[in-house]
Image (cartoon, rainbow, N blue to C red; front, side):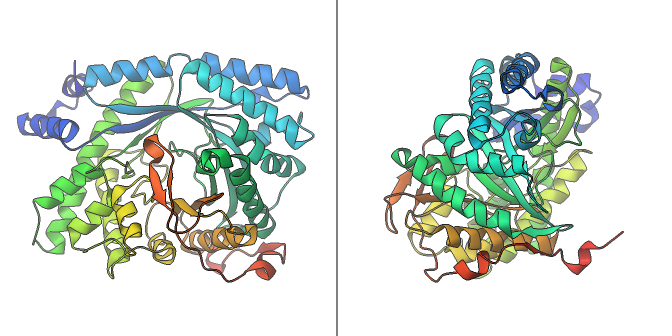
Length: 468
């Protein structure tokens, strides 16, 4: 059985012909099309308990029982469909909510991180997200304790990922949380300095975080979700690049149509995989995230797509416009292929995970400031960027505030995943390995914003947030 047999069983054979069969096989075998992740979201709200020991036991049992067949099912679908499924992951309810009743100190929360890590290893997933707090308007004591526990939690676990939402279009920016996160990123870098500050690669700070994101490190299971859900993230920048090579010299109308059609085909494959995973696991299908997520592999790069569109190097004048067009056409193609598109959906620009981005930074074509401009029109934000280990906590907070402000004003998700690599400086290179790749250390503006981020309080929501 393959993807086309499944499609016929699902009554979708009218969409497929022999040309599409050959085309899809080529996308998989030659152009690096894959399903980047099947992520099972699991609610832990029913695990809440005033006893820390009982809470940890309930969390472990809930995850290991609900997700016991996730990895084997993903592998079986990959064999049956002939479509690579790279990662199998879990997201859980933000732990600040789950642990609030039992955890009195940051150290209490660290025990939950250990439990999550053990559960992730038991079921065989590569990452588990949801060691998270949602503090866009204010922090409870539990929120603050979880945030202060993050450096230690990421240092003593292997597969746990953490995220904190510090703002939204409806609430504004919680600058107390922004300032605290600058300190925690710095502390996480120090706590994992023997691994080139790898802990920071598993920590992301959001504005307008979605409840249904399957991609790490920002995945968590939103409180509006069902008890368990299946979300799928597809990828395919290599497929888009090859398609665009056939449209060299064509006008923008042809270019946009090519991107849109290709995104449709990529998303259809993800939709079929998601439906089959839901059916086999007996868990409802949630969303398809159709983000173009690059890898360090040659030919699997968003930067190379932008260069195929006509830029000499990413970072050149026109980069932001090209990325805006790419992002929009990916979304337009994807929403025609699935009724349940969600998560982040568009194009990611993580520096360390994209060989084209790495090359552009190394030759001076791409700077932190240009990346920030690009985040105004892409899916997420400043992602997987290595910076000098001497960068201050207040500067980190200032960068977070800038990126969160872009999300707040533009009513979109933005995020920051910065890695201040202890002991490294501009000109050095840091190796993270696997999908996390490697990155040149980028320079940061040396001037201080300390007085700004230390003001405390909240930046109010913008006027267009008032829509009631």
